[in-house]
Image (cartoon, rainbow over all chains, first blue to last red; front, side, top):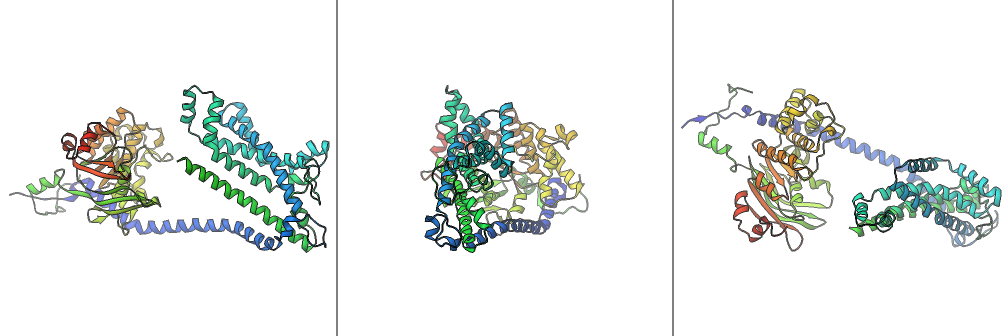
Length: 303
Length: 282
């Protein structure tokens, strides 16, 4: 019986496999260390990035929470030194102004977004570019714009404030709507067309419902953005110590109240301003979390 | 090529034994023992046991939802990245239990390569850089070894002749079929012992598919292949053994039959296999 010599180095693949596996296992410790360092650096950056956010939230809660009494939510603003003043008029003012702003902006924003999503022509390009520029315009400029357009002609009013806030919200909604609508698979759109539907019908029956979670998220985020703006309101609603529910008259709003009270040299007013800041922050936080929950819930239900 | 010299180790095998060792179907490379994959506690594929042999192609076939891909991804710990997934059972690769916590997944994956449904070459890397990406990830720096492995893998993937002049060109300039062959080369360059292929031709046209199928036949001498396919003709053409999976009542996949391909397609033991291979359902 012949005995063959069996040599692993004869087979180039086997020998290369052995060499590669040797290098891989000898370097695995080093690679793991690098990986751990990398993850640690990421984590560190994450923590550093979160510090300002957490510090602001913590500080505002600590300073603002003591101001949250029943009086704070139910009584109007009172001059310094007089106890039992609240921010009732500012809360109501903000609700009314933002509601008007939403009512104006949502249809324009979503339909504009639909146009942007469906069209790649020069008009869409110009609109998209304008929306992006508008997002970056300093909010004080928009306040001055509102002042010139509205206040110069009709005087200070809640409508002027809603207009200015709406201009802040519009590009945010529009671009969010475009992104949400573009995320709808083209084959659904084509399936609709192939059944003989018109573009508008497909948009209404197929595209918009599918994009709904994204649209709701976009609107909520835009509201959160608009609700916190101060500068556009300073030039448009003037402020009002008393409860004013008629938006054609000068009104009060939370950001204005915080702005004017926090610059006063009276502790009781500054205390109320902290309470207002906390309220505004809480509302915006709730809107942001709500936006995530809504889109997550709707997406899950679809599956 | 190295010539037999005094480095030669004589291990005293008889001709018969050497011959046997080179025969397909004799050396077990990967053995699954009661493998179950669950997502959020619900089994997606349940209690699968079979062996894959050296120099052979093992195909996993079955209708959608039977857990073929899920099972395949368990074999190189790809479920590690999915937090809701859990794999139980033993998956033996030589003496290593793939599914053991102490098995390093990165080292394991250099022994068990994978090719995905859609060609996924790294778009910012050149053809050459793609081919040697796995080697570099594994810490290989030696230029001669990189070059040698890249050429060998590209030759094996039947890509060398068409790309040797443009190795520095971006991989995204290749056609779909070429990209998939580059992905095969990329997996081969690490010289894995097992190559997992997850419906590697489902995104390709018939001509590109034919080339990949021919390739699979040539590659099995180099690496043990386990392939998922929902194309029965493909399984028949490329595989030596076939595992047929089916979704059970509780919507989890189970292994119905495991047999040499010729037997599974002509005279299977289970009537459900017969129905499936005859196209009566699925």
